[in-house]
Image (cartoon, rainbow, N blue to C red; front, side, top):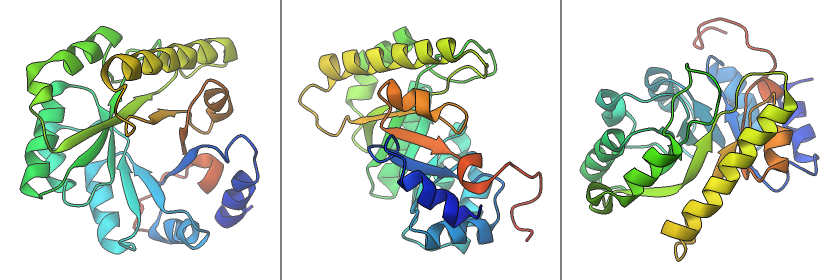
Amino acid sequence: MSIADNIESLKKETDIIKVTLIAVSKTKTVQDIEEAYKAGQRLFGENTVQELVDKHEHLPKDIQWHLIGHLQTNKVKYITPFISMIQSVDSLKLLSEIDKQAQKSNRVIDCLLQVYIADEETKYGLGFDEAIELLRSEEYTNLNHIRIRGLMGIATNTDSEKQIKDEFYELKTFFDGVKQSYFRKDPTFDTLSMGMSSDYKIAIEQGSNMVRLGSTIFGQRVIKHWKNN
């Protein structure tokens, strides 16, 4: 199936209709992204700053770019002029830098706190207690150029559907608690980004309202430079 066919098929899934779809375009060519764009897709997720910046320069400016990979503080300045959402905020230091650079661009940047839920040391993210500590900190309350829109999490890469389900359930429960305790009167705290191509259906069942799909849209990853046809 073509990229356009895959997007059309997803739009017909009853469980995908109620969520926001992020097309994960890392390593994909400009031509691949343009095909998805022509099929109506406008939200794309990238893992690295360099690839994100380059693609932004080459593609339509109404694309809403999401940074979904680990972000180093010294690279924040390259994306703040145009980024739509940073999903991978895993420290107060990073959030403060985003705020600082957003102020320079006279913007308020939407962010998700990435919460560590996987049973894997290679994953990034705040612990549950660290996320609460961040939200309670005086430094956070003084940030005026970021907006916390919700939480993001990545489940363990495992064949155990029960483990994946439990991890997503835990994050949804935490999301509800954070919203009640810290954003009860803030309708913009509304995003729970859980689920990738391998587990998005489980994520949606557990309450995700944003999924990040790569191979489901673009096909299995082929290792090549994105600028090559």
